[in-house]
Image (cartoon, rainbow over all chains, first blue to last red; front, top):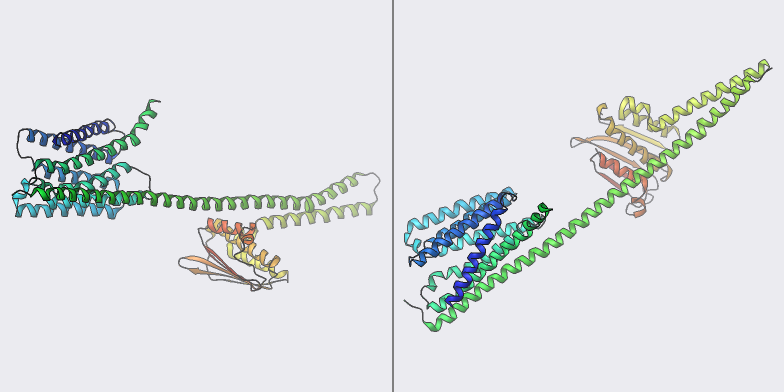
Length: 215
Length: 263
């Protein structure tokens, strides 16, 4: 099971790397949202690489999970904010941003031991808020042009599925290695699907433009 | 603390199923979005098509009216002016005939003066029909007053006109549309409605002007497609559109009509 997990997880990282490269070479053509998304991919990749390195040194890398969830929250919030034109929605993002950090700041100052394991509340809060933005964006697209449609589908599927799997992150430490890997395999699979949606978005949005510029 | 292996399997199953459940929820949301979007866009397209069709019909009405107007002007020129000038020209040739008697010359000259006078009068009438000089010089109020006077003088109909608004002469371009609408309405009342009494009232309303028009004629079926698509109707609608106004028709058979529009 461990072998399968490594394989799928590495496919996920590889796809993440490919997507980062793909989005980087089209950085100039896209708008602000495109740039923010590219930075998001870069940050996530860096966090994954560091956590892989630390785990190879057998150092506890769980504190990186906070960077992962908060980084994802920050950059995807900015990503959605750049896509929203409705002032109320933009205001909601600002409010979500401030309140999320305020609440988590209070929580960590009260219990700093949370820094070294999965903070369930943090996972819940960041994922939940992002899912709301994703729904907002679907709502906006009802009458508008489909832009970042597939990325939005990917984000929604991944957040819905993976949030539960991260919730049990602390629990898996108490299980036998074999059993705990099953949930991580599921998570890695979801991650691959998420990255595939991002690749597909790139294909739909940018690959045709490349052909046009060549003609 | 370790978890009992017997529960472990159950636990993992629960975790996987909850994850799967939420993924299915996400898929349902996405599918729902996909079909809602499709439906909304389809409705939007239908709405736009209706608007385009409406505009096309208006355009068609405008073009046909323009052609009819040309035809009418051509006919007026031909019947009233060309024919008279023709006779004037013939008479002028006659004057060249040698050995004409004194009284013959005076008869021909009188003929010519008479015909040229009639032709002149006709050109005035045609020009007046095209754009009343009173309207052009003194504005909408005077134009409508004169229009009412003309209808009154026909004795077939009694027009009551009331105006509580001061019209700005700089707005004459817009007021011409109002004038034409009233012209069309009055013509319709007389020709199709066989009305005996017509009332026209301008009043200020919400910063704009509202015009109330009513008659006691035969009226018409407001919902009939035939009436809605009539040229006159389309023309009035186009003009109200140009004025950025709204128009409402109220009528029943044999109960006259009430028209209110603002500009």
